[in-house]
Amino acid sequence: RRILVLISGNGSNLQALIDASRANPSTLEASIIHVISNKKAAYGLKRAANAGIPSTYHNLLAYKNKNPNNPQEAREAYDADLAKLILAQTPDLVVCAGWMHILSPTALDPLEEAGVDIINLHPALPGQFDGANAIERAYEEFQRGEITKTGIMIHYVIAAVDKGTPIIVREIEMIKGESLGDLENRMHVVEHVEIVNGTRIALEERERSKQASE
Ligand SMILES: N[C@@H]1O[C@H](COP(=O)(O)O)[C@@H](O)[C@H]1O
Image (spheres, helix red, strand yellow):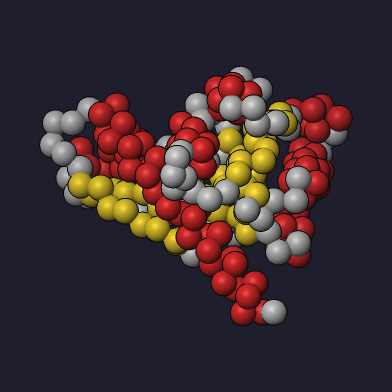
Protein backbone atom coordinates (compact mmCIF):
# COMPACT_ATOMS: atom_id res chain seq x y z
CA ARG A 1 0.00 0.00 0.00
CA ARG A 2 1.73 3.13 -1.28
CA ILE A 3 0.64 6.59 -0.02
CA LEU A 4 1.71 9.93 -1.43
CA VAL A 5 1.07 12.99 0.79
CA LEU A 6 0.49 16.57 -0.37
CA ILE A 7 1.37 19.32 2.16
CA SER A 8 1.78 23.10 2.36
CA GLY A 9 2.82 23.78 5.97
CA ASN A 10 3.79 22.44 9.39
CA GLY A 11 3.00 18.82 8.48
CA SER A 12 1.69 17.61 11.86
CA ASN A 13 -0.89 15.47 10.03
CA LEU A 14 1.84 14.07 7.78
CA GLN A 15 3.73 13.22 10.98
CA ALA A 16 0.66 11.42 12.33
CA LEU A 17 0.58 9.29 9.16
CA ILE A 18 4.33 8.59 9.34
CA ASP A 19 4.13 7.61 13.03
CA ALA A 20 1.07 5.38 12.48
CA SER A 21 2.70 3.59 9.53
CA ARG A 22 5.87 2.97 11.56
CA ALA A 23 4.32 2.15 14.93
CA ASN A 24 4.78 -1.37 16.27
CA PRO A 25 2.17 -2.74 15.86
CA SER A 26 1.36 -0.43 12.95
CA THR A 27 -2.02 1.34 13.01
CA LEU A 28 -1.71 2.09 9.30
CA GLU A 29 -0.46 -0.77 7.15
CA ALA A 30 0.97 1.33 4.39
CA SER A 31 4.12 3.25 3.54
CA ILE A 32 4.46 6.95 2.81
CA ILE A 33 6.46 6.77 -0.44
CA HIS A 34 6.71 10.48 -1.31
CA VAL A 35 5.74 13.96 -0.11
CA ILE A 36 4.97 16.92 -2.38
CA SER A 37 4.79 20.51 -1.12
CA ASN A 38 3.74 23.67 -2.93
CA LYS A 39 5.59 25.70 -0.28
CA LYS A 40 9.41 25.62 -0.09
CA ALA A 41 9.47 26.58 3.61
CA ALA A 42 6.95 23.93 4.65
CA TYR A 43 8.21 22.34 7.88
CA GLY A 44 6.56 19.15 6.67
CA LEU A 45 9.46 18.78 4.18
CA LYS A 46 11.82 18.57 7.15
CA ARG A 47 9.60 15.94 8.74
CA ALA A 48 9.78 13.90 5.51
CA ALA A 49 13.59 14.24 5.38
CA ASN A 50 13.87 13.22 9.06
CA ALA A 51 11.83 10.13 8.22
CA GLY A 52 13.94 9.35 5.14
CA ILE A 53 10.98 9.94 2.80
CA PRO A 54 11.78 11.52 -0.61
CA SER A 55 9.98 14.77 -1.35
CA THR A 56 9.41 17.35 -4.07
CA TYR A 57 8.81 21.09 -3.87
CA HIS A 58 6.42 21.86 -6.77
CA ASN A 59 6.61 25.63 -7.28
CA LEU A 60 3.63 27.45 -8.84
CA LEU A 61 5.52 30.74 -9.09
CA ALA A 62 7.93 29.26 -11.64
CA TYR A 63 4.95 28.52 -13.91
CA LYS A 64 3.52 32.01 -13.42
CA ASN A 65 6.89 33.62 -14.17
CA LYS A 66 7.15 31.56 -17.37
CA ASN A 67 3.67 32.70 -18.45
CA PRO A 68 3.03 36.07 -16.71
CA ASN A 69 0.25 37.17 -19.07
CA ASN A 70 -1.89 34.08 -18.56
CA PRO A 71 -2.04 32.98 -14.89
CA GLN A 72 -4.89 30.56 -15.62
CA GLU A 73 -2.83 28.77 -18.27
CA ALA A 74 0.16 28.74 -15.89
CA ARG A 75 -2.00 27.11 -13.22
CA GLU A 76 -3.27 24.51 -15.69
CA ALA A 77 0.32 23.61 -16.64
CA TYR A 78 1.21 23.42 -12.93
CA ASP A 79 -1.69 21.06 -12.23
CA ALA A 80 -0.90 18.91 -15.29
CA ASP A 81 2.70 18.48 -14.12
CA LEU A 82 1.54 17.83 -10.56
CA ALA A 83 -0.53 14.89 -11.81
CA LYS A 84 2.54 13.58 -13.71
CA LEU A 85 4.72 13.94 -10.58
CA ILE A 86 2.16 12.02 -8.54
CA LEU A 87 1.59 9.23 -11.08
CA ALA A 88 5.35 8.78 -11.55
CA GLN A 89 5.39 7.54 -7.93
CA THR A 90 2.62 4.96 -8.63
CA PRO A 91 0.73 5.58 -5.36
CA ASP A 92 -2.38 3.64 -4.35
CA LEU A 93 -3.74 6.72 -2.56
CA VAL A 94 -3.03 10.46 -2.39
CA VAL A 95 -3.66 12.21 0.93
CA CYS A 96 -4.01 16.01 1.13
CA ALA A 97 -2.81 16.83 4.65
CA GLY A 98 -2.83 20.62 5.02
CA TRP A 99 -2.48 21.05 1.21
CA MET A 100 -3.58 24.58 0.40
CA HIS A 101 -3.89 24.60 -3.42
CA ILE A 102 -7.22 23.99 -5.19
CA LEU A 103 -6.83 21.01 -7.54
CA SER A 104 -8.45 21.56 -10.94
CA PRO A 105 -9.81 18.78 -13.18
CA THR A 106 -6.44 19.05 -15.00
CA ALA A 107 -4.84 17.55 -11.87
CA LEU A 108 -7.73 15.29 -10.80
CA ASP A 109 -8.78 13.66 -14.08
CA PRO A 110 -5.45 11.86 -14.77
CA LEU A 111 -5.52 10.45 -11.21
CA GLU A 112 -9.06 9.20 -11.68
CA GLU A 113 -8.16 7.65 -15.04
CA ALA A 114 -5.25 5.87 -13.34
CA GLY A 115 -7.57 4.61 -10.57
CA VAL A 116 -5.74 6.61 -7.88
CA ASP A 117 -8.07 7.95 -5.18
CA ILE A 118 -7.37 11.27 -3.46
CA ILE A 119 -8.64 12.32 -0.05
CA ASN A 120 -8.45 15.56 1.93
CA LEU A 121 -8.57 16.68 5.55
CA HIS A 122 -10.75 19.75 6.14
CA PRO A 123 -11.21 21.43 9.54
CA ALA A 124 -14.98 21.95 9.32
CA LEU A 125 -18.20 19.96 9.01
CA PRO A 126 -19.55 19.17 5.51
CA GLY A 127 -20.92 22.33 3.88
CA GLN A 128 -20.22 24.46 6.96
CA PHE A 129 -17.02 26.44 6.15
CA ASP A 130 -15.67 25.32 2.78
CA GLY A 131 -12.33 26.78 1.70
CA ALA A 132 -9.59 28.55 3.64
CA ASN A 133 -9.51 29.78 7.29
CA ALA A 134 -12.34 27.44 8.29
CA ILE A 135 -11.33 27.31 11.99
CA GLU A 136 -11.17 31.11 12.32
CA ARG A 137 -14.52 31.53 10.56
CA ALA A 138 -16.15 28.98 12.86
CA TYR A 139 -14.63 30.70 15.89
CA GLU A 140 -16.02 34.09 14.80
CA GLU A 141 -19.52 32.64 14.22
CA PHE A 142 -19.39 31.01 17.67
CA GLN A 143 -18.51 34.38 19.22
CA ARG A 144 -21.61 35.79 17.51
CA GLY A 145 -23.68 32.93 18.96
CA GLU A 146 -24.53 31.59 15.50
CA ILE A 147 -23.11 28.08 15.98
CA THR A 148 -22.32 25.78 18.92
CA LYS A 149 -20.10 23.23 17.22
CA THR A 150 -17.63 22.79 14.40
CA GLY A 151 -15.68 19.72 13.41
CA ILE A 152 -13.34 18.05 10.98
CA MET A 153 -13.87 15.80 8.00
CA ILE A 154 -11.89 13.48 5.79
CA HIS A 155 -13.44 13.39 2.32
CA TYR A 156 -12.77 12.29 -1.23
CA VAL A 157 -11.51 15.14 -3.41
CA ILE A 158 -13.53 16.40 -6.39
CA ALA A 159 -13.11 19.65 -8.32
CA ALA A 160 -15.67 21.40 -6.08
CA VAL A 161 -13.68 22.55 -3.01
CA ASP A 162 -14.39 20.52 0.18
CA LYS A 163 -17.52 19.01 -1.45
CA GLY A 164 -16.42 15.41 -2.05
CA THR A 165 -18.08 12.43 -0.30
CA PRO A 166 -17.14 12.38 3.41
CA ILE A 167 -15.31 9.32 4.75
CA ILE A 168 -15.16 10.51 8.36
CA VAL A 169 -16.99 13.41 10.07
CA ARG A 170 -16.22 14.34 13.70
CA GLU A 171 -18.18 17.06 15.50
CA ILE A 172 -16.33 19.27 18.01
CA GLU A 173 -18.29 21.24 20.60
CA MET A 174 -17.12 24.83 21.01
CA ILE A 175 -16.33 26.10 24.51
CA LYS A 176 -17.32 29.54 25.83
CA GLY A 177 -14.24 31.65 26.69
CA GLU A 178 -11.84 29.34 24.84
CA SER A 179 -9.14 31.09 22.78
CA LEU A 180 -8.81 30.48 19.02
CA GLY A 181 -5.40 28.92 19.67
CA ASP A 182 -6.84 26.42 22.16
CA LEU A 183 -9.65 25.54 19.77
CA GLU A 184 -7.10 24.94 16.99
CA ASN A 185 -5.03 22.70 19.26
CA ARG A 186 -8.10 20.69 20.27
CA MET A 187 -9.01 20.27 16.60
CA HIS A 188 -5.47 19.20 15.60
CA VAL A 189 -5.59 16.42 18.21
CA VAL A 190 -8.77 15.07 16.58
CA GLU A 191 -7.29 15.55 13.09
CA HIS A 192 -4.19 13.50 13.91
CA VAL A 193 -6.38 10.54 14.90
CA GLU A 194 -8.89 10.80 12.06
CA ILE A 195 -6.36 11.41 9.22
CA VAL A 196 -5.00 7.94 10.02
CA ASN A 197 -8.47 6.35 10.26
CA GLY A 198 -9.66 8.08 7.08
CA THR A 199 -6.59 6.95 5.17
CA ARG A 200 -7.03 3.36 6.31
CA ILE A 201 -10.71 3.35 5.34
CA ALA A 202 -9.97 4.82 1.89
CA LEU A 203 -7.33 2.11 1.27
CA GLU A 204 -9.77 -0.62 2.36
CA GLU A 205 -12.56 0.82 0.18
CA ARG A 206 -10.19 0.93 -2.78
CA GLU A 207 -9.20 -2.73 -2.28
CA ARG A 208 -12.83 -3.79 -1.89
CA SER A 209 -13.86 -2.03 -5.10
CA LYS A 210 -10.84 -3.51 -6.92
CA GLN A 211 -11.81 -7.03 -5.79
CA ALA A 212 -15.44 -6.40 -6.75
CA SER A 213 -14.39 -5.34 -10.29
CA GLU A 214 -12.10 -8.39 -10.81
N1 LIG B 1 -6.23 22.25 6.11
C1 LIG B 1 -5.82 22.36 7.48
O1 LIG B 1 -4.49 22.83 7.58
C2 LIG B 1 -3.92 22.33 8.79
C3 LIG B 1 -2.63 21.65 8.43
O2 LIG B 1 -1.91 21.31 9.56
P1 LIG B 1 -0.52 20.52 9.41
O3 LIG B 1 -0.83 19.08 9.05
O4 LIG B 1 0.28 21.18 8.31
O5 LIG B 1 0.11 20.64 10.75
C4 LIG B 1 -4.93 21.38 9.39
O6 LIG B 1 -5.68 22.01 10.40
C5 LIG B 1 -5.82 21.06 8.22
O7 LIG B 1 -7.14 20.73 8.60
